[in-house]
Length: 243
Image (cartoon, rainbow, N blue to C red; front, top):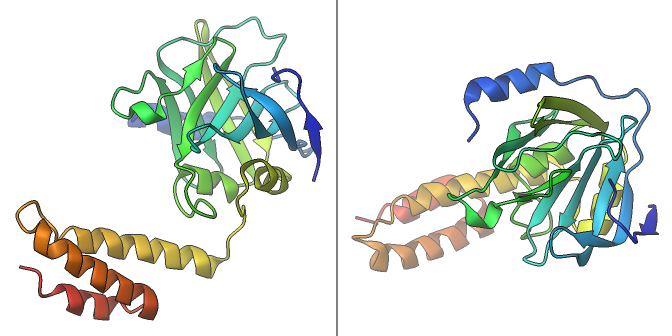
């Protein structure tokens, strides 16, 4: 695992646009990009210091992942230092995706999800990628990236757009050090957490504003039994008493 001290920072999209991005991103470099766990890194725009898993690809574009003061995990993307372009300051600023899973975007400001609102200074952009709770991300965009071999991004500048990719071969070690999580999960562990989330959503859907006082204790009891026995049929039978 490689670490170094940093005294300065490295330099609901419309479906058709997201689809175009997924097929148009360039191929990643054949040479693996180095991922570093960089300590004492200044978080934009506060300059709060944290640790970031970060990489610069051969074209000079930078990508990184760090835990902010609110413990949310954020993605960091930056144009090459010698690039004269400037990122747009509002609306859709960047798209990104791993080769496994869904794409995501950074829109500024995000008035629907203020906790996920990112930041751009014209050269760099950050956005929320995971709530940060638990031993690892078991689902969502961050899990997709952790399962991927490449990460690609599209930057929207005042003159157009720029596409680039990073090789993710060395990401796991850097992420584990920077964010203090387990980057890799077994298929069995992943399947259990996906089932657990699906059962929780199914059970809570039975609890409405009209019955929540009586339903919520039943759900808590039934879900605790489900976690113990891992039996979906038992959970459904337990919840069947909810009216």
